[in-house]
Structures are given as structure tokens and as C-alpha cells.
Length: 75
Image (cartoon, rainbow, N blue to C red):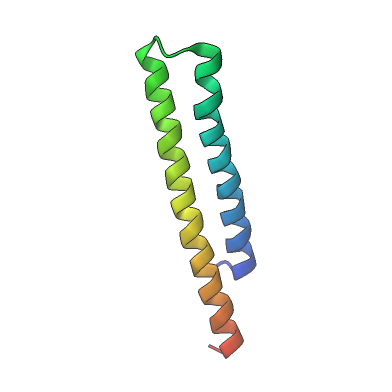
């Protein structure tokens, strides 16, 4: 079981990855356009990856806080 510090580090990494995916949703259409259906699939996939990444990061942050509180209490 990873300790709370590692969980927070992974959560922070996932937050940064989500920011990159959401940024690519904004930047890619400016350079390529949305004429091809493939571009819409890629943009949709980037949005889904960003949302999943944020959701996992939030869960990891909550889990790390619980582990820190349990360690402080003495469990």
C-alpha cells in the first residue's frame, strides 16, 4: 500500500495531465480544424481522459487525507 505522500504526488501528476488534455482540446482545433471526423474523435477522447484523470486525482487526494488522519490518530 503506498503511503499518503505518494498518493498525493500521483494525484498532482494526474491533475497536470488533465490540464494538458484540456489544453489540447482548445489548441488542436486552431491548428487542424474540425473537418475530419477523426479530429472530433481525438478531441472527445482528450476530454474524457481529462475528466477521468481529474476524478482519479480527487479520489487519491481523499484517500491520502484519510490515511494521514488515520496515522495521526494511531490506527
